[in-house]
Length: 196
Length: 117
Image 1 (cartoon, each protein chain N blue to C red):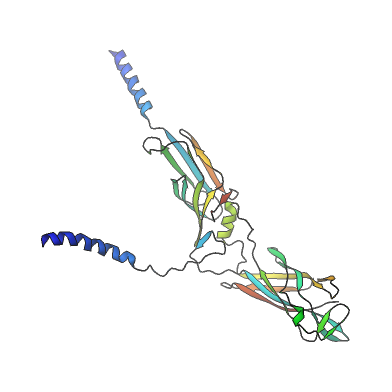
Image 2: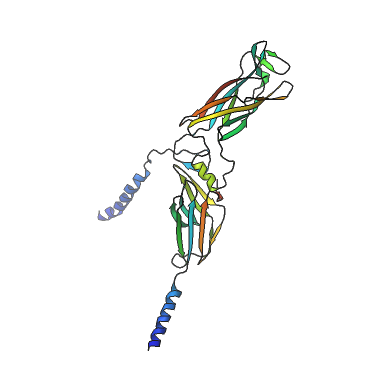
């Protein structure tokens, strides 16, 4: 009996020590930054994307007619003095569109065609090379912080039926942008722009 | 007799000096903005556990008592931490620490680093 106790007692003691370590840890929510080298257990969300819509039109005989084209491209946009870039809209397959009208430059429609832009707002460099680059990344200096900003849509290109690229400048298109805490994307709005 | 005493003292002093364990010193300074550096090491040898911005950590290696073969060669490796985020980094440069040398390394915003990913 004594021998059996001497054999089993240490086994039971060891088991009772190890058993609690098998239990699940407290709830733990790891959030992985978009950079694969960063580990974070924060669930904070930072604004990283902006969407907007452009509806170009012309005026014929006092009537507004909306332009149909494959895409609007090289839209130049600036936010304060922090960030700027150029972007293309989504691509429209014209073979599935039925323009109701056309002039010598564009296919036209009485219904507005919104050309959507999905814009990634980030200044993270393609390569992180120095300790300072990683410091900026960890401190979220590459992201827009919550607050109020001025967005300027400066210009874009639109292509005619003949394949000619027309530059459209929009110096007066200045839009306030408010970034709220915990919001990953913002809708800047829909803008009707007359092409003269 | 006095001569013998002086000779003995001199001999004893020489022994003390020659028996001293040789050493090498490495210092690392955190000069990176707004981040902690933790678990700083070189070739697996720990230098400092944690450095605040502006702080310098130091490690003295002894040839005999630490049982290390010199020179020690390696990248400076560390965790960079800010808030809830952290990243493992190592310097691109390889450093060499030899016996009876003192090496000072300043990790700044411009120090080239890499992450294996």
